[in-house]
Amino acid sequence: MARERWLHHLDYLITLVGYSVGAGTFLKFPYLCMRNGGGAFLLLFMLFTVIGAIPCVFVEMVIGQFSQSGPVTVWNMCPPFKGIGLGTVVISWTYATYNSAIFAWYMYYFFNSFSTYLPWTHCSNEWNTPSCVSHNTDVNDVNNNVSTNVTIGGLTAAEEYWRFQVLDITDGLENLAGLRWPLVGCLAVTMCVVLLCLMWGIRVSGKIVYVTVGVPYLLNTIFLIRCCLLPGSADGIYYYVYPNFEMLLEPKIWMEACAYSFYSMGIGMGCIITLSGHNNFKNNCFRDSIAMCLVDALTTIFVGFTVFAVIGHVAHMRGLSVEAFQSSGYNLAFIVYPEAVAALPFPQLWSGLTFLMLMSLLIDTLLPSFEIVVTALMDQVPGLAKHRFLTVSLVILASTLIALLYMTRGGIYVLTLVDWYATFPSLALFATMECIAVNFCYGTRQLQVDIQTMWGKTAPRCMSICMRFVSPVLLLVIFTFSLYSYRPPQYADYIFPTWATAVGWMISMASILPFPVFFVWTVFRTHGATLKEKLKQATKPNKKWGCQTKTDCENDDISFQAMIEDSL
Image 1 (tube, rainbow, N blue to C red):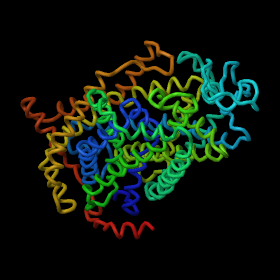
Image 2: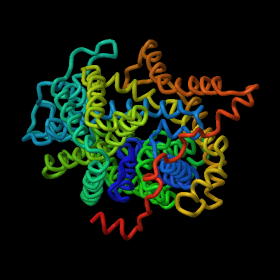
Image 3: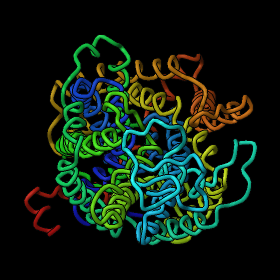
Image 4: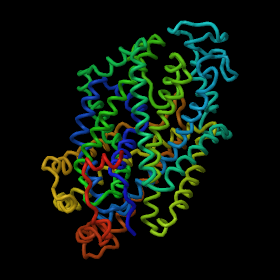
């Protein structure tokens, strides 16, 4: 059965950009910049993107396109490593499931943005405590103002709204309590949206991304212009672009910049392989890899200007310096951003646009993540390809049932635990093993032959050197550093109990274990008199490697000009 194709090549590129940019650009990247010297981190991020991330993206594009398959069957190239494919599917499914919960939280804020008074701007709500502090209003009187330089104790109105109204948080993981039904409703809507986007395959989802990727670019530009007019925004932007070169003496900034450059591109997640498997066989992956990585890096930097303008303004409101103000992840999305938009004229409008942008970014990550799981299932059970709607529905149903855990009153603790271990240390391990398998077991020379077969040219020598030596070394360093810098999970002041840490390691092992199990099993079943002969024979491509149908291998490449004209 011929593989489903992108209607236009631009659909593929925009889907990849949407997945790589994602919500992490607004949540994780600013925090890393803030604690790693601002502009100094940017310089290293761009360096590692060029010498490390681009070669890895190129490799994943090549093997996905040449095999015309998904993240599991692509390892017919080197069968003992098939466990990597299974592991990436587990990671992607876990990643998609808890991101669905985050999307539901965004949706809850979006709906409440249309209230007469934004509920996180004042302390007169039923869930507020006597120690609640508002930067706009007095604790007990919504009509009185207080100083923005707050020195008294207590949580801000935005913090109390997040903890006591949205989450209705419990005291720990031991007490999940009941479901938060408003959030369950938002989760149901989220999963229905995902189902509708995926049920018709990439021919439809490839068009949806034009909106979900385009809207954040437009809104981010509007936010940047508006935020630059706020007091304190210039301080935030200055901190962002001015490089603190003294930070370059610390190894940690190098490690985190390197790790984020790979993480940002989605390397080792199976997404690039899966999406590239729907390309025309003669497509030029070299051009695509450079275009995707540069667009992702430049978009990340562009978004950083907006985020740091917001951070500078909120730090100004709180009477703090930008350097002293550090916030990341959920606090940035659900506390800092709401506080910032509350200070603008027409706050309901700006709040709605903010969470619309965050939802658009996250749906660009959700759709490919679920597509990885669906593609892997259909590759392993070809009969499911004729029943795509049923396959997608079952995946979404199973994901919804798991995501209900995150919708409980203690769900934030569950999500933090899963997020902490879902990709640690498996993602760095898989990316490292992937580079070793492709460049040393399969061989860079054979990869160059495959590249020439597809579009008639080999990769430049500098790309081959980076693929074979630079990228594997960088990934090995990241893997080692992730183990060295490990610390037990924590949410705010809550320290997870020992049994929760054990559960976290079980989550981590769920994606790692298929790799050694399949490796040993495949080598054991291979014919050979000695272990060396078995290894040598097992690591050769099997008969299913490469495109399997004549239709898959006879597609003509599309010129860039024709691609643009057809997409308009």
